[in-house]
Image (cartoon, rainbow, N blue to C red; front, side, top):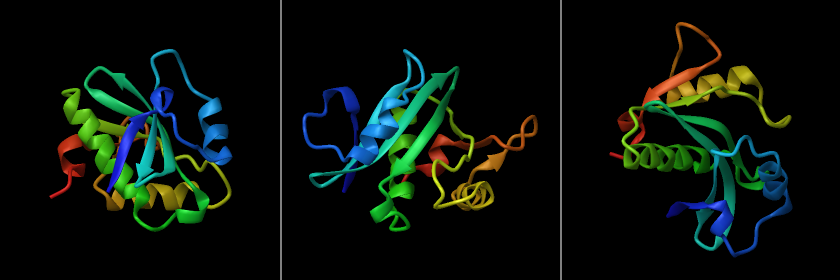
Length: 135
């Protein structure tokens, strides 16, 4: 079962691919989290709390294990994180971080998980945190 851990307190190995993603951290308040499955770090997440929303800046899964449910598992854990912080929603801006996907495919993936486009900015997608929680 996958879990999220603060990057700063992780003492295990981290693939260079993920170290590179984490090196471009956003701001002072950005929470850098790693997705761990068993003993292996498989993903990276950067989030900020903005009012009652958890804003996801980056959701990065190792290339070798993409399309196996890790991204969906990460979003469920992100939703749990949001709930733990009493936040109402999770917001993303689907942006490809490499050449393995395009914006339209990412937007469709987020829609399939219950996200809807913002009326003010169609490139921003929001979902109630409770909608992402496991059944």
